[in-house]
Amino acid sequence: MRNKILSVVVLAALVAFFPVPAAAEPDEETLEADLADAISAVNDAQDQVDAAEARAADLETQIGETQALFDGLTADLNAYALYLHTEGDLQTTNAILSADNGQQLIDTLTYTGFLAEERAALVADAGDLLDQLEAERESHAAEVADAAEALKDAEKAQEDLEEQLEELRAEEAAGPGSDGGAPAAEGGPGSGGGCTEDDPTTSGCLTPATLHVYNETKEAGFDHYVSCYRSGGGGEHPLGRACDWAADASGFQDVDAEGDDKAYGDQLAAWYVNNADALNIEYVIWYRQFWSAGSGWRSYSGVNGTPAGDHTNHVHVSVQ
Image 1 (cartoon, rainbow, N blue to C red):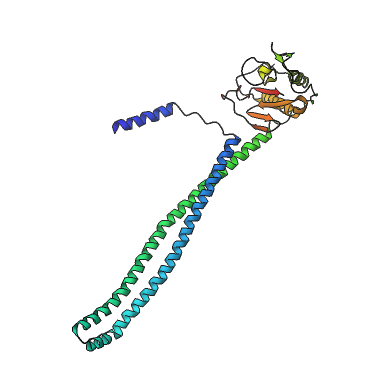
Image 2: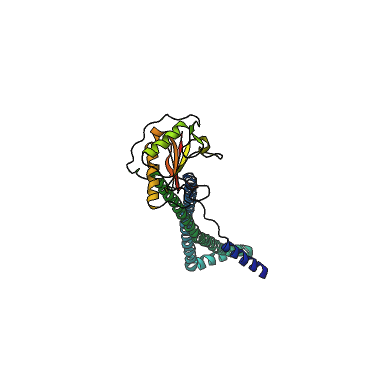
């Protein structure tokens, strides 16, 4: 036992020393799935409440019927007792005097006692049944209360998930805000095309459409550090179809953008969205949010929780 206690203490110490990492915030799809499960749980809990209340109502009916039976049998027994008290001796005397033999006399006395015992037994049985039903009602009342509490908890869980989903959707719908009044972009060569143009930011290449986005972005006044082509890896960078614009003027900083840098990123991201048709923008990522023409702004979680992964230190733009 002592070794078991020590093991529990050591385990608790290890858990405290190595804390469990915080879970990532759920996305809309996860919340919608959880909400569907919560709604199903509410329906199941409501079924349990309905069943418990139906059983309670059935018990009340049985108790009422049994009480009526008990009262009737008790009244009958009391009437018979009164009969025996007032007329029973005379009737018994007549039965004794009219008996032809000893066995008939015994039978007469036994039958009179049997009638009294039979009535008493019926009253006792009804009383026992009434006690049993009332005990069951008292026990079942706790089940009704538990079912109602479970339904309350399920409804609260559903409400919490609905609020989370509503908040997430409100955040997604908000986006980064205004583009600061930057001038509209001119239409370019359209989507498609190979990586045929020199990349002004690296020694790599860009598609004509991406080079047009770069030039228009500069023309609109967004002049912070930018890097476009990147060899290797996935995504659009190796294809010459994406650029990363640093929030800080001098380059990518390993911190979340704040103040003027955050405002710069907000305006640039908003400008890309506002000019998405002219520039053939495929999607934009900025400050834990993702935009595409099909979905609008949505919550976004990076792969490693860093400013680069969460895109809180640069605006990413991909071109069709």
